[in-house]
Image (cartoon, rainbow over all chains, first blue to last red):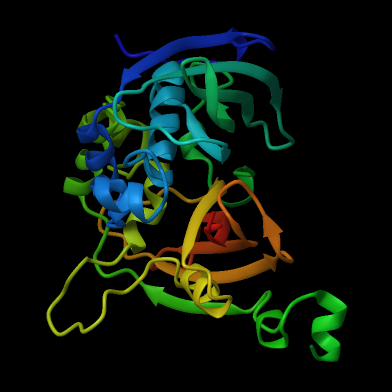
Length: 158
Length: 176
């Protein structure tokens, strides 16, 4: 059954279910190609090590965004609509890493147009060390008949 | 160093680019289903909005692309007929690397604001705007400069579909 999270079920401090992913070279190369990112540090081990000075090829920025989106919408279901996402990478994710995503609700509210919002902090960590911090603002239905995707123009203020 | 550079710490030609619209261009291909599925598969995203036509029809009036795929639609093909040079996405970033003679670069911060949903068949238009360039900085990667570049995305109806802000660090590795 598909989740359809509504705003009334979300509260400050709520934790999102943790997601752990075993990262392989395929994860990284597939992610780079899915993002149409042809830069060699995301598929060429020799280039990554000897030109970039990193330990291996590493997960690219757009694919990290896709991982964050998947993590958040796994929680909200399809009626969750992303409004804003900001992330800062402090380290890289390499083949052989287990990346763990954890999220917390840090704000819940309804804006002046009646749109319901949840603000989240999400971290992506490897071996307990945060590699990327992310903040996400996601619109949620305020009731069973509400649909954030139906908002247009001035009714959508992310 | 001229007067402008003394005031801002930036060469005048770089200072002149801050806030200017550059590289306004239309994507090389329309938003398409295959790439949506490839992206979803790469992160095991089972959101029925992208896999189930009935859900898409009910919630979004038809199929859309995942919001975080914004940048995918303006990344050029790695090769196309008649092209002599490989075009660079986010060309302003590469221009700055060249301008400051910084051979390496990484992206640190990325902010994306999502507006009108991107739909299959859309042909997105993008434009790049340099927002800031720092003075010289040294990090564990090397010595260089940080810069912030906005990329605005519009659809064929001139509706804003999103804005991405990238913080890049161009650098030269320290020789030990």
